[in-house]
Length: 331
Image (tube, rainbow, N blue to C red; front, top):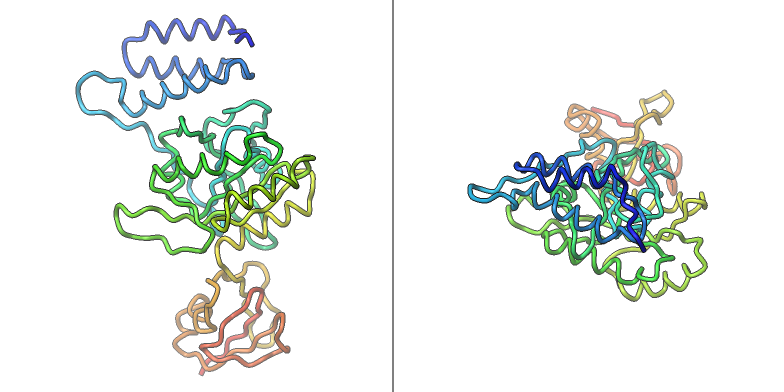
């Protein structure tokens, strides 16, 4: 398939070849990437341009002198946690983000359209999480700014296109690239290690996008065999609200949290902003969250919630449950 390069692209290519400094080369390459027509015939050109740009930003194109790293990209976290959405080209990451958040992301049918991370807020009932769309990962290409962004996230969603012929290969290729960066995707809730040099164990789930594709059912069964019990799989379609709700729930479950609401004696419960605690937290942990003085002067608590009778009396070591309403009493 012909590339059909435009005159503007060819002018940027001329500037790249004539450039004398790394800064001039970077500027020209960025223009070439932006101006390159996006279709099957330019996939290799695009990958080559991105690889050259990555080398320049790492300083590998300089002759002599110490190499300089390219600029890191930091996305300030918001909400209850930051979740990076990663995957192979055309895995449906941007479409998923657009369906779930307020992010203005470009959704295309050609690969490598996402060039910079894009955050958006996703609401699950009364809790919000930050999803971050990211550039594609392949065995041969990994944007240099991505590893620190992924390591600093609280969790990850590995997107796989259930309608793609190579959907069974996508998880392995992406996880192999992450393993090389000392990032290991796991299904369980983990505590971030403070030890330098240890691999980052990142809670993650596998999102099978385009679940409405005719081949999705068979792909899901095969993916379960390929991935095994390493990651939970959630099938999702941007046209199916029920599947989007299941995805939201699965993201919430990645964090191992329960929501607890405070109630003053004789007053209505405050449902405006739940207190978030880890699964297994106790009434005393909740009291500490509300105010240290409540924990110090704790006498007993009363609780309302699923599986409890109204006003059930609880002690300091009793575990709280998701969506409990707790009324604290002090001595």
